[in-house]
Length: 170
Image (cartoon, rainbow, N blue to C red; front, side, top):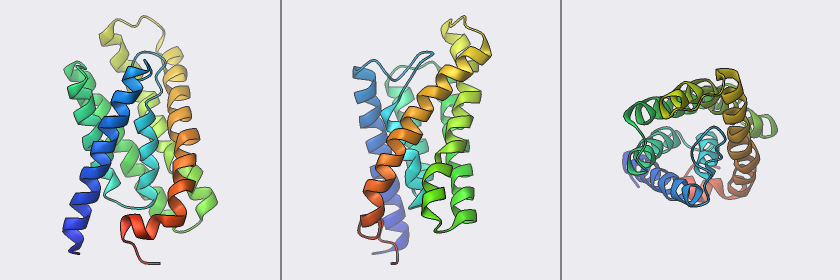
């Protein structure tokens, strides 16, 4: 298969999964507010397996934020936080190569930090009155649950079959 087509298909599937899992989180009341655990954010670990996860997760976040009725600043800054987290996760992937035990935990960290730093600012536009650092902690905790806890489960579920899923070399 053509590598460009594979990249586009992988990014599109990841984006679609992000949107679906975003709506699942929303239906459970988990996807917004000062304490949020977006199940879809676990997909950030897919950056460890394919660079297509960068546009996939980013586009998925953009689409979910837009389709779920977020305000414009949330759509823009939330998506920016996601992009920054994915790009820095990719830098970690390139630096660590195949150090799997470290990689599994390290890849989601920039994603968690980018969202914990940016989203509390966005929450003020929704009328959340808590101090920035309180929101930093609550958003950060939600991201740790989604990206590290659920992300680790996803990472280890995908790892044994990564070559078949992502078409990478063994």
